[in-house]
Image (cartoon, rainbow, N blue to C red):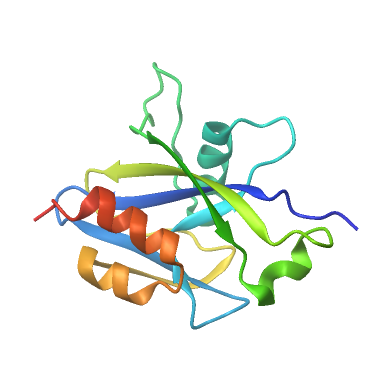
Length: 152
């Protein structure tokens, strides 16, 4: 069995013009809303994983290439945290893996965009306060609070 890497990324996407955060509803737990997340592939850097996960989970065409028309300022928060994996998601990891190291990123968009969902049931653009309340993930809530509460 191919187990998930217990090293992941979190990408908080927000619109600069409305100061709202994009939240995604999980398919495997419909009560769970979150930002873009995903495991880092073997041989991949955290920032490469962040770009890939944004594309896979939202369809947003962003590029880290300087001359690209689709360049978006993906911001590396230069912060990583270790967190306990929710018990009902641990089956995806090797036996005895209970924690994951998560690298944090922000993706400020000029305006809200409609994502193309492939891994989630639904999306919502919500206020910073609502995003903090609706996620079950304490680290997702912490990242939103830490980096976006000054938006008004």
